[in-house]
Amino acid sequence: MNHVIRDFTGIIGAFVAWWALVVLTACLSGPLIVEGEAPTPVDTAVLLPPIVAATPTLVVTATAVPTAVPSSTMPPAATPTPMPPSPTPLPADPRLITQGETAVHIGPGLEYELSHFLGPGTTAPILGRNVAGDWWAIHGPGDGPGPHSWVAAADVIVEGHTGHLPILPAPILPPTPVGAHDVPLVGETGSPPSERCIISHPGLTGPVNVHLGPGAQFALIARLDVNRWAEGIQEQVNWYEIRLGPGQVGWILVTAVALNEFC
Image 1 (tube, rainbow, N blue to C red):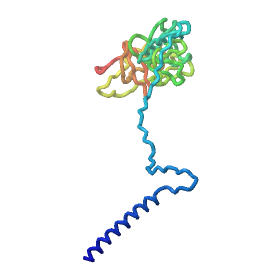
Image 2: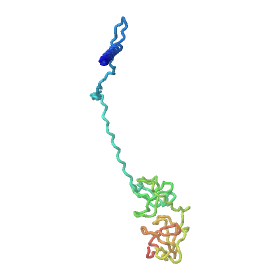
Image 3: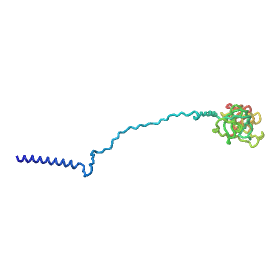
Image 4: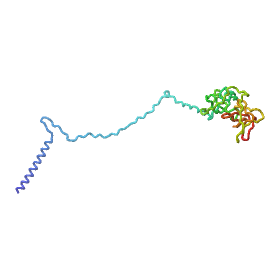
C-alpha cells in the first residue's frame, strides 16, 4: 500500500515539474520589458517578399497614317526613259561599198597596175587585207571569182567585222615596167605528166602572152615559148591559170593555146 502511495506522489511531482517548465518557457519566450518603456510588439511571422502577379505587356505598333500632300508640292511623275533602238546587226561576212567611182589595182598600192573601176554604190565581199591593213582584197574583175584585186580602204565604206580576215601576200611588183622584149620565156620541155591538165603552145605562132590575172588588162609577166607546155590549174572566164614554177602562176588565154583531155 505504501509503494502505491509513493508512485502516485511521484506522478504528481512529475506533473508539477512539467507544468512549471511550461510556464517558465512561456515567460522566457516573451519580450523583455524594461521599466518605463512601452513594450514593442514582435511579429513572429516569417517575412516573405511580396508576390507580384505578372501583368502581360501590350505591344502597340505604330502605323503610319498617310497624310494628304497638296498637289502643288507633289514631285512630278517620273518620265519613262525610252529604250535606245537596237543596233542593226553587222553582216557576218564583211563587205565594202564604194562611194564614187573607185579604182581597183592588181596589188595593194598605187604603184601596182590599174585593174579596173567599180561604179558608185558597188558592193563587194572582202576576202582579205594587206599587212598594213590599208588595202582590201576582193575578187578579180567580172561577176565570178577570180584572183585577188585590191581597193584602198580610204576609198570605200566597210560593213561587218574584219578582224578575222587573213593577211594575203601582195603580188610581186616589177621594179620597172616590163616591155614585150624583156618578158621571160617559160614552159617545160619533154614529155608532160599523165592524167594532168596540160596547157601547151599550139606551135603555129610566136610565144603566147602570160598575164598576172585573167585578162589582157593585167600585167604581162611571161610568155609560153614555142613547143613548150605548162600545167593547168583552173579556168575562169576563158582564161587558164598555169603553173610557171615553184610558187609562181600566171594566166593565159584559152583560145591561144592547146589543151589536153584532162583540162
